[in-house]
Each structure stands twice: as structure tokens, then as C-alpha cells.
Length: 280
Length: 166
Image (cartoon, rainbow over all chains, first blue to last red; front, side, top):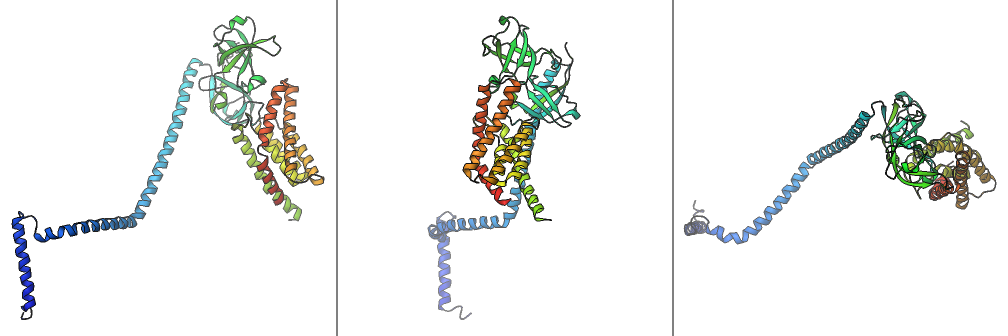
């Protein structure tokens, strides 16, 4: 106590008292909000505190990041999986939606042609030949597909005919192939003839309509449909539209150029007509 | 296992996957992808390569299967290409065994001739059996050869590599 009350001790106590008094005065003068020490130190400490707070904040974030890295990585992985799931669901939805649309169109077509029995198929592969237009479809004789069955798209537009069958697949020769021949007629006028694929028209994907009788019965824009003659195709399937009237190389035989209604080379999902009422 | 049997097995293990891979490319990618408006024929070029760098027997056997697969890829009975690629495989292999130098010029000539032979047979069949106009089918055939010949360089290196491995 004696030591404590030495000159130094007394000086410190006096200093503390002065500080306390100064603080009390400044508080009283300043409206009781801030002491003089705070006022004096604020310009110096404020930026330091700010810098320190920023540093601590950064360190805290780094610590959080390190501490929670595994947790965040796991969450990231979960989110990625979820995104993949949603993408897959979206793809499936789109696929189903497209399929639904195809079946809706087919339903409309099937309602108009209730005599037709159809089997949905998908195109598996196309021919590698540059001189033919044929493709393989996903179903064969085990699904009721038979040789010479007609093949249509979802709108009922003629695409081709089955020309080879195995139990699990079938080869379809498109109507633009140079070996194809279909009995046809002009829907508007009833003019009859034969639709065939030609080497000269093959690359453009067009057809030749060789007709019998009066040329005046055929006009550009007319619709060509199957006539049902011969019994291999049902009557009334839309083949295409007349785009021009011309003559062959000899200049003797007139014929009409026909653009197929079906987008044959882009076909992916089609229908094999496995049974129909013969109109003859 | 004798040395001969072992070599045959090695050749089979090398050439069979090569052939299947080419067929898959031919029947899928190159039925949709066109060059100069035509689909390139890969298997005849591959058959020429195997015959040149492998020899007569390899060329003939590979040509036989390559021909069958080409006919299948073209959705046609296994006749045209099966016969043609077998015969040309044997011929190119024989020439390689006896007189041809195994280099790029020889491969280019053999490949081009093999493609021309394929196209010529196709054109001939179409004209004789289907009455196709020569100018139209010859034009397509020529473009088919040119589009296929674009692949001559990769096929040269692959064939040369296979020849060395066999």
C-alpha cells in the first residue's frame, strides 16, 4: 500500500482522475453521447477499425470457405445432378410432346381413313447408295409388317412401300426411288395416271406423273392422291402437289412434275399401313 | 498355337473391329452426310488399303466382307460390291505382292480405280436393268468417286499402320 501510494502511484491516480473529469466534462458538453477520448481517437482508429474489419471479414470468409468446402462441393454435386435430372425430364417431355403431336395428327388422319390399320415405326438407318432412296424401319414381320405394305407419315402422306422384311425390321423403298411406281389420280379432276421416281428428278426429290387423257385436266397446284388401282395402296393417300407440266426428253410424252407432300428424306417416325380395304 | 495361327488371329483381331467401325460409319454418319451432294463410299477405299499393305489373301478376305457390308449398307442383295471388292482386293493384293510399291501414289491409284470400278458397275447395272440415262447416273457416279477420294489421306495412314501391325 505504501508502494502503491508512492509518487508514481499518485501521479497515475491523478492522471486517471483528470481523464475521468475530462470525460465527464466532454460528455456533459457533448450532450452525453461521446467522451473526449472517443472524439480524439476516432479520426485515427476509424480507418484502422475499418481495415481490420475488412481483413477479419475476409479471413472469416476464407475460413468459412475452407471449413464448408466439402459441404458446398456436395451441394454443388447435388445441384448438378438435379439439373441433369431436369434436363433429362425436359428431353423426355419434349419427346413425348412431339410423339403426342404425331399421334394427334395421325388420329385426325385415322378418323378420315377408318379402314386403315397402322403400325408406328421409326427409321433406323438410311441407304448408303447414291442411286436409291430406301431406309430400314424398326419393326418387321413379328409386328405384322408385310411385304408391299404402304408407309405413310403422321399426316397420312405417302412415303413409300415395304420392299423387304425380316422378323425385326423392314426395308422401305421411298416413292421417289427410281424403282417406285404408284397408281395415282388428280384429286380435283379425277385424271388418272402413274406416279414414278425418275433418275432425272431423283436428286431434287420430285416425282413424275404420267397421265392418260386430256392435258387440260391437270393444273399446277393440283393434289395427286393414290388411286388404289392394283390393290397395293389404299385409295386417297396424298402423294404430292403438281408443280409443273412438261414433256420427256423425246418431246412426245407429256408429264406433270409432282413435289411429294411428305418430307421423305427427313422422316424419322412413320406408320406402316398393315391392313386396308381394297377399293377395286 | 503355331506361329501361323497366331498371326491369323492377330490379323482377325485387328481387321474385324476396323471393318465393323467403318461399316457403322458408312451406315450411319455417311448416309446423312453428303459431299458434293453424294454420300462417300468408305469401304472400297479401305479394302484397297488393306489389299495394298496386307497382301492378296488379306485383301481378298477383307474385300469379301467389306463388299458384303457395303451391299448391306446400300439396302441391296449382297452381290455387286461383294463380288467386286473381293476381286479387286485379290487383284490389288496380288499386284502389291509382286510389283506395286507400297506408297501413297500406289494407294491413290488403287483406291481411285477401285472406286471407279464400283461406280462403273453401279452405272452399268442401272443402265442395263433399269434403263437409266447415262448422263445422269454417270454424273452422280463421278461425284461419288470424288467425294470418296477426299478420304484418301486418312485411309492411307490407317492402312499403312495396319499393314505394319499385321
